[in-house]
Length: 231
Ligand code: GLN
Image (cartoon, rainbow, N blue to C red; front, side, top):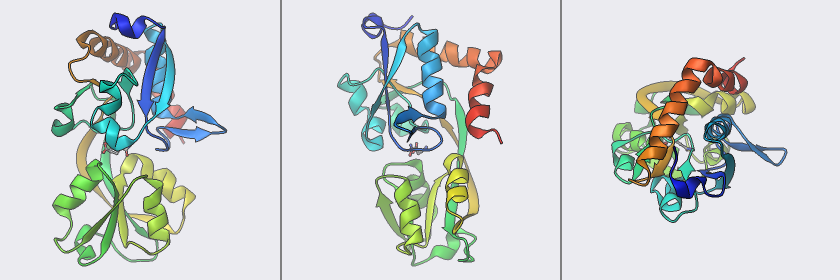
């Protein structure tokens, strides 16, 4: 059972960070996506109604809107990392991810190593930023942007030679922007988890984990996956 203060108003307030298509984005004014459907299903199985609040990804990863009571849970395609787990409680993993290198389709670039002295765009505070910091040539310049779509804009405008972000979102990006191509994928072994306030409610984490396990075995997860990733 979730903590009493969560149940009190019958609402599970869920912080997310828009847009991160197809996990969370606006479509005809509605907040939709894989994470959104997953969170709705979790809320419904807790007999609660999900209400979504748009927050800044960096702040959510630091736990701010969970600690100040803005939301009960966060879902934002967020990779489970040791650093974040020091300030957040993660649920069990619900999605696997890796990192993708995106470049201009006609650039001929095929690896991070070729980007010596060049600019690489990443979203601030993400695992892509960590990956590029650790793996790009030392003299490559890392350009941070606030929103993932700014990576595409910077690439298209020729402000950067490449961008790196989650392989889970890159398929749609390339489809919508044919002038951009995936040059390489880095198997970082990432997994997304929902997040809760650190040491806030062991009960709620446990209930959500039980629901995530049920969704895996009863087809609920597959239905949501198929809806957003099925061909
Ligand atoms: N999975 C990546 C991370 O956790 C990116 C998430 C995002 O931009 N929403 O850093």
